[in-house]
Image (cartoon, rainbow, N blue to C red):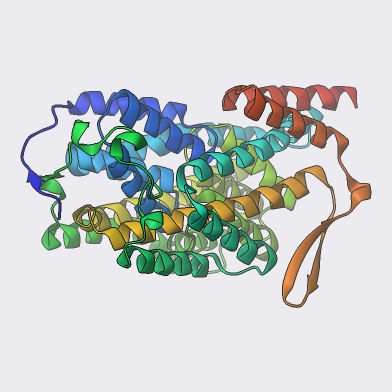
Length: 457
């Protein structure tokens, strides 16, 4: 266990609040972009936390259900300033995106059939393809340091893309393999990929403001863990129980509360890894959205700050807007957006406050670190699966599934090619990968071009 340090880090809480607000306002482009922003500000600029400790926390958050970027913010906020630091970091990370997506949802519900609005979201969907591919590259560069990690990512991609293997099974398999490799002392499974020392990997833990030691408040305390768990379980589930008891299980608000509460428990690997599950349920099971509308919602989430999984707010909004009875549609949709956000993000605080003290204690445990590193590598393959799925549905109007010998293959109808979508996506990729144009600039430009195309064609 790392030594306990009683020396304060001297970062005022007021300064930390402003830093977390800055991170929240700059957190565009999905988990990869948000984690990169946190790394640049917290590790490189402020030097609050070292590279190895940052990656250790990230790997733990990758293993949890829910948005890993927000959970990473809660984790580091808690490390720096106890429970209040985690609460502020986590809430601020969600708030700007909630306000922005709510405003866009109002616009979409009121004017969604207007040509200019359709053009706007057409452009966004084309740009999002480049964003997701960029996520693969960003996370891959940090996680795939050797052939073992590359092999794990490839195996995860084949399993989920061709054989539709459940994501939790992929995560479990990667964790067990990594743990086995760590127990055997295989360097390839260690944080940082087993190459070089801490200095070669970036800011060392000992040179950061937080240092190498364990803050006194971060020591495991079963009493505190039980109290904080009880509080957040009540905050999370009380609205769900009240809705079920008063409205019944068939009401749209009850369905939203129960479905997204379940999602908060069973969906692992962050937003990119779980969007397929959410899309399947929201579109095919509950019929809250059409397939194209789910992509529109993803475009909203990509162009606003905050976690990408906040697309679920749009899903809940549209579901209640169309199905709520006895309420004004916009009022019902607004209440559903708040409810969806609540049951999606409150559990994130529970997972971090309950588990982080024990994960910090095991920071020097090689087997655990290796398991977490293996999970991160597997997630890269899952995100690549999403990128290909998303690309096929953006560039082609019709995509069919072909099944043989237990495998599944997505086959696009070449005659349904969308030339403008292909052109916009290619331009976005060129801008991001070749000319290093900022994510927000690319998304805004594609949205504008989509509007112009809607006027011309």
